Length: 113
Image (cartoon, rainbow, N blue to C red; front, side, top):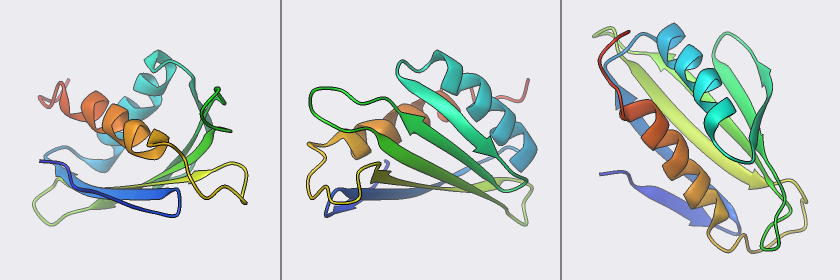
């Protein structure tokens, strides 16, 4: 079960995957193209930063995904969302929805390709 923490329109979650960090990063970048309203801002060795589009309920979110290698060869994934407009105090649940979309995209096909 995915546990998401939300406070003042900022959401975060941490989960593990039995895949190498590079595989997780590649899957996330590929999946972002298929998730409606989400685009890749930039990618580094350990981080993928995404942006969700604004809608009538949100100004859009900046989504940071940190990838850390685990000793067993898997990856620890930490996802944090924050509204693109810094003065936002409520995101109407959009951060949690974005985290669920990312989690689903990464866990729907856990077998290595």
